[in-house]
Length: 143
Image (cartoon, rainbow, N blue to C red; front, side):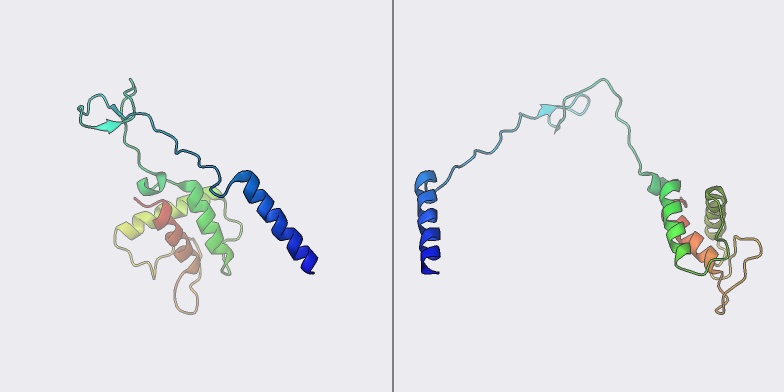
């Protein structure tokens, strides 16, 4: 075992001698000088001006219209319960979600709300499928 340790030490010393103790220092990349952005004055620094108009964007979820994310969330929630609507289509779920948003915004109590025809409440009196739909809808569909 001492021979192995001596060999490792010798190899380490050789590497340090060949490369130097300090190693190689790579200088930080230099950044291009900022440019003034057209229409914002010369004191504003940002990307170079273009002819394209500046347009504010709102994430779809904030605008109440991210149906794909809603469908992922609602299907995940429904998979975690004993759902009464296992064969619901995407269109049916989106329609139910939008209905839930409208009814919730109008002040209807979420604890007694049902957006599914024939839905039976659980032992606590809540419509669990509707609660799942409303939960996902509030995150991704409701304005």
